[in-house]
Image (cartoon, rainbow, N blue to C red; front, side):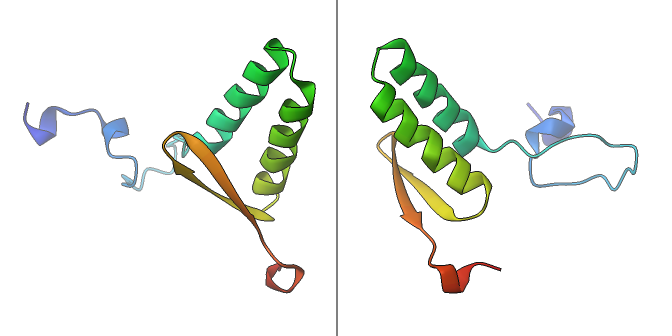
Length: 84
């Protein structure tokens, strides 16, 4: 397959500078944390699900960084002095 044959969405970091372009950046951390929350709720572990939801909210508010290792989230909460 030639590069010109690939759909534009394949190039997630590129922009075609089209002002009518409504493409969105997909945040896979949000998707994965939501999936984890649902999994723990479905498996009757509400305490874990609650912790996952708290991480998701803090991440979305910019108060935490999440990195992934072997499919597990590692969370580092930002200090108050780093918040804008």
